[in-house]
Length: 325
Image 1 (cartoon, rainbow, N blue to C red):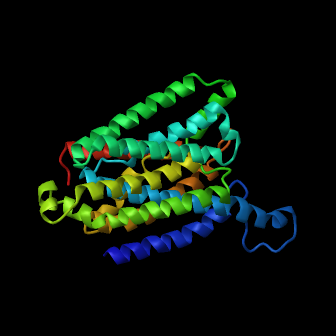
Image 2: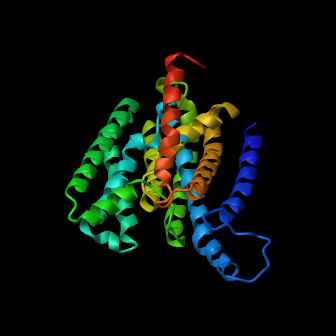
Image 3: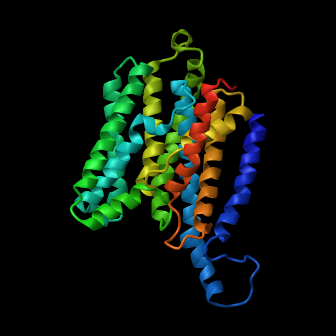
C-alpha cells in the first residue's frame, strides 16, 4: 500500500510541476511557434522565475510534510505541528531582527539571521529538555520558546525604526514564494534534505514510541538520541523553509492527516508520503495564489494556507470532540 501511494503521489507531482511552470498571470503555450516578445521571454520566465519557485515549493513542502509526520509520531498527538517546537518562531525572530537592524538589505544575511534564530531555538530547546528527553517537558519547552519568540517578534515590530522596515517585516512574515531565485533554492535544498534524512533515521525510534515510553525503552530506545534527531531534523527542515520563504503554516498539520489513512499508520511509513504530499500541496497552493484575480497583487502563500488550514484544524477538533474515528 505504501509503495503504491508513493507512486501515485510521485505521478501527481510529475503532472503538477509542468503545469505550474506554464500557469500564471502570463500563460505560456508550450506549443506556440510564432515569434514575438512572449516567445522570446518564455525561456527567461520559465528558468529564472517559475522553475526556481516550483523547486522551492517542492523543497519546503517536503520538509514541512515530513517534519509534521515525525512530530505527530514523536508527541503521539495528531494535532501536533512543527511550529510547536518553537523553531519556526525562532527562525522568524531571527529574520525580523535582520529587517530591524537593516542587515536584510544584503541578500545573504536575511536567511543567515533566520537560520541563526532557528539554531538558537534548537539549542535552547535541547538545553531545557534536559538529558532524560521526557516528552512532556520537551513539549512545554517548545511552547515556551514559541511564546517567547512570538513576543520578541511583536516587540521588534512595534519598535521598528522606520515605517518601511515595519512594512517589510509584516509582509515577510506572511510567507510567500514570489520573487525567489535559485539562490534561495541553493540555501533551502541541502538543509531540508539533511533534515529529512535525520527524521528518517529517527523512524524506527518513533515506531517504538507508539507503544509507550516504557515499552519503547524496553525495546532499546535511547530517548536522548531520538530527541537529538528530532530537534536537528525539524530544525533544519522548518528553519530552512522560514529562512527563504517566511512563515508558512498548517502544512505539517494537514498533510499527515490526509495521508495517514492510506498507510499502515506507523510514523516511519508516513514520513515519505507526507513529504511528497506536502510538496504537492505547497506547489498547488502557490499556483492558486498566482491565478487568483486580485487587484493588489497575488495572495500571499502563508495567508492562503492559513485560510485552508484553520477550518481543517477546526474540523479535526470537532472530530476528536465527538469521538469520530
